[in-house]
Length: 153
Image (cartoon, rainbow, N blue to C red; front, side, top):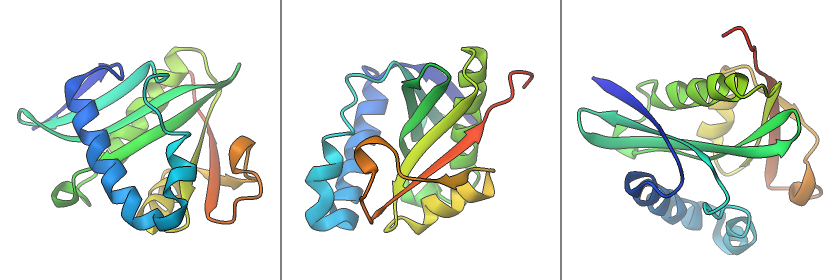
């Protein structure tokens, strides 16, 4: 049975999952990893979701304010053996609901072209590709997305 926990970036299980995510990204991003790593520090992330299967942490996601009306989704990860079971979609939806509860109107995010599973996840969940924003502008490997969040959810 899956259980969702709302917490913050200091949570031990989130920190463990992020280390696994960073190890995976270091392989995928290769020489570009250090560029992306500088934007993925967790100490500035106040809103974190950890999903548990029984008592085992199996996935996480986080968000921080991007603009006055938008949250940026960060640090999405699901253990490889737990993928394709709807956990990433659950995390994404929980973050969207939380963003709406906090009166934000949209969520934005960036992922890499070397992460086709992530691109598929976001597209499947209603995210639309937008021009690369901020530090990702002009970066060929980056794909940026946006989705409005419904305050009525």
